[in-house]
Length: 106
Image 1: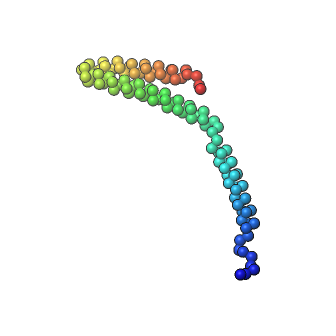
Image 2: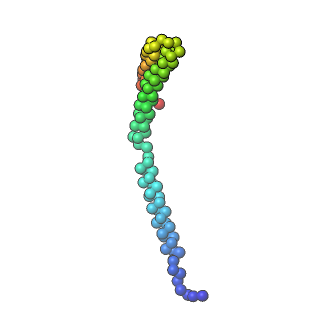
Image 3: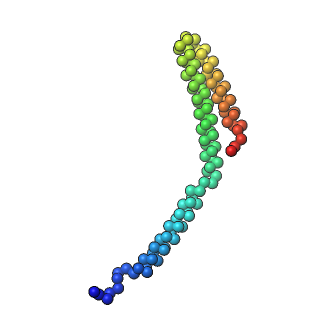
């Protein structure tokens, strides 16, 4: 065989692997710092509460209107069933919204 030195030195590769591991560790720390939930969790909870309030309002009005329309269609009492049940839906929706807003935070 030959007495020549190999093209790559194993000691050099170990140093490169160590440097790569250090860079990966630093990148993981930066990523954890970047993705750490800070004030975003509170904003997310407020967004969910607002969405729930909107869903209660739309559901109360829409559900009341639909049920009232079905009652009017079946009984022939147009528009009184629609108006009465939709008013009840609005009252229930506002009652639920008040209940949601007065609940103590967890």
